[in-house]
Image (tube, rainbow, N blue to C red; front, side, top):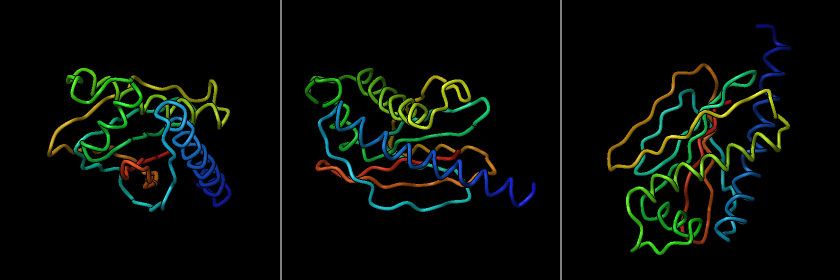
Length: 162
């Protein structure tokens, strides 16, 4: 790959990362009435998520990638509770799975829309992962951007590899 092609790929990745951050803030502000602020973004050579609870979604087509929303169980369940308007004590496992899938789907869809990728990228069905020792790994040559977000409930991360 030429240096010009490499720079173009990095520019697209940066644009998608910015759109993801805007999508997270818009989604949680609208759906959960939570102010959300990106604290920092780190880069990793691998897409490897050790989590208590999370959602994953694969982008495919002209633009391929993976997005994961991850956090501590108590934080993510409270966010889900706000989005689905159901008290935590009334939630069952299916509510948590559906809510986690919906969060990652809304964030990825928002990112795709904000970046203008209408037909250039498609979203696979989201996956929810819940447990005390879960790990998700996606083999990719792309860098993974790990953004920590802050809310009044607590912090969570979004891993973006695009």
